[in-house]
Image: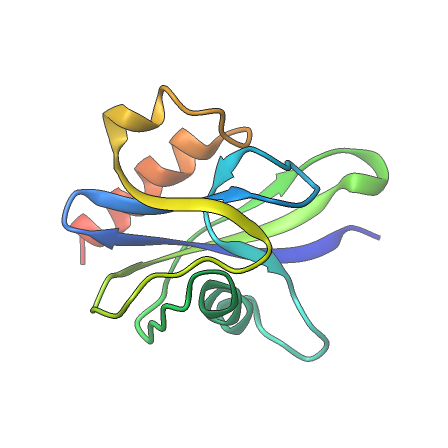
Length: 131
């Protein structure tokens, strides 16, 4: 059975918060904060919880962007993607994060990212622009 997971794109003006994963899967790759859903947790709740655990940030206005199927076979995940605006706070990484930072979309092209990240970031930017 596919694993359910959630991630969130947090925007500060034209910059999005990315983390570099310190653990598998995708160790060393840049991506959005996120992770697996816990029992009885909604995807939105998981995205907000994972953001806080991985970066120390708290958001309350997470908006749904898309639902994707990533991976294959026993590694397949149903990923719900959300987006929110940065409202303040001090960003800090957890033990699951090697590095983190705010990036403009052109800068992301030079990073080793998880598959499809550029499309997800574009979609999240469009959702916020149309709110």
